[in-house]
Amino acid sequence: MALISIIMSVHNGAKFLDRSVESILRQSIQDYEFIICDDASTDKTYEKLVRYKKEDSRFIIIQNQTNLGLAASLNRCLEEATGEYIARMDDDDISLPTRFEEEIDFLRKNLEYAFVSCNAITFTDGNDNVGINKKPEIPTKNQIIHGSPYLHPATMFRRETILGVGGYSEEYYAQKRAQDYELFMRMSAQGLNGYNIQKPLYKYYFSPKAALKKHSFKSTFYEVVLRYKGYRMLKVKPWQYIKIFIPVYVNVKRVLKNSFSAKESTYENS
Image (tube, helix red, strand yellow):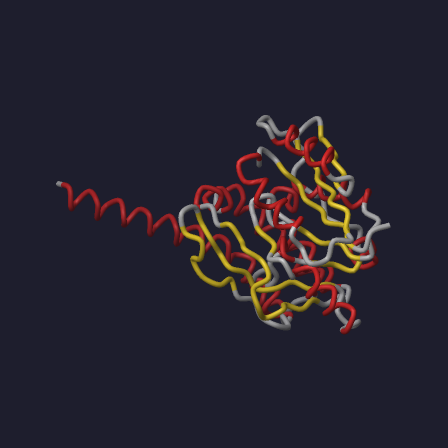
């Protein structure tokens, strides 16, 4: 049994996988098992995972024969997990060397919290430090209603809490969009609270291409449904249900901004 079970799902992530794995190998705490699910990749992802396993027995590799999505893949990882703590990790991000040490230290000293996350340094291709992704220290219910106040891939859970709520929802609305937000709302509804360490222990990769997919109209619809069901769990006040349309507002605003920018470019070039 390991102290920490690190869970990760990868789909066609061979390009950035090495930097993510290397950041785990450099952690100040080395008592872990690294459970990685290849979600039916078509690039060199699985070959890399097999190599990691050959070089380090702490790696546990799972392979989906068909693409199941993030929620189902993470649940497969949870089925294999034996650690006292469950830590998330994304395949294109970087955990700073003391991340696990500081998160475990916090959870051991603060038994009232079910999980802990942290602030993060945001980076992109060609820019190692775009800024700080800052989260509220102790998120309130109103902040949870507005949007997820935790950085999911930087989160560490107590094993009994994430397994106790049944892991990640595989309902269509959660599987397709913001399954982490659904999990945090469900945990909050059950009185399981989280905390954000107010220092960056994580480097979060921002991909403009991936961001566009998140804001597609199909994804927006799924998030509206997710918010509605989450608000019911949280028993929010009737007037607060208007916030289920926040994703619609953000998406329409983005489309209009892009439209105006395109028109201005056309005028300048005419």
